Each structure stands twice: as C-alpha cells, then as structure tokens.
Image (cartoon, rainbow, N blue to C red; front, side):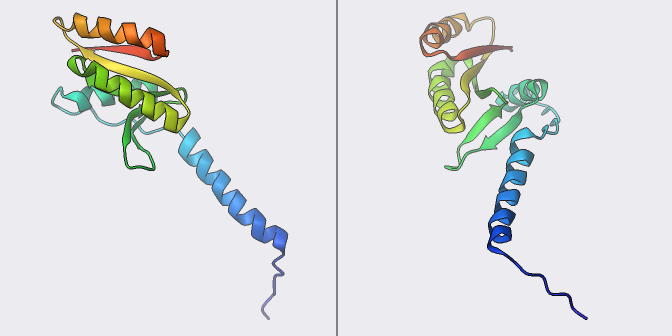
Length: 136
C-alpha cells in the first residue's frame, strides 16, 4: 500500500528556504581546499600562494562573470604587479562593493618598484584599502 503524504503550504515554503540556507552555508563558510602552486612565478603563483595562506577562495566568480583574485571572510583582494597599482585599486573597490567585503590590493613588488608601492599607499590611506606586499 502506498502512503500518501499531505504537502502543506508551510512545507512548500520551507523547502526552498532550507535549500537556500544550505547553499549559503556551503559557499560562504566552507574552508576552501588549498591549490597547488604553479611552477612559473607569474601573477597566478603569487595569487595562489597568498590566498592559500589566508584560507581564501581563489578566483571567486561574481554574477557579472568577473573574478576576485582572492576572497576571504573580510577582504576582496586584487593581486597585481607593482606597475599596475592603479588598476588594482579600481578592481579591489569594485569587488569589495559587489561582495560587501573590505577592499585590498596585494602588490607584487621587486627591488625597483618602491615608487609604485608609495603611490598605492598614498591612495589607499584615503580610500581605506588594505595593502598587502608580495615580495618578488
């Protein structure tokens, strides 16, 4: 004999709510799996190394198909070479706005890049952007 279950309006409303809550918990609060470091020391190498250390999500995709280099519980971080400091500011501010996180720029800095770092630090004080220095 087949048992009939009565589906009430309360159950119909509750099921999608439970599914959405589970999705949010899994995507927002789960610990990301660390990724292996690329062999070549390109931008991705520094991005993965830093994001693994911060236990963030690498290449977090936004609804408009743009990607945050590293998303942590507190920061939306853009990783860039020192000479692209200004571009990094714009991306970090945009990603922070969309994700409701604080903006951060992780600058890959070599021995000849101090002028770029000073420029970033000057603007970041005004706009409350966290600066992370990644040594080349």
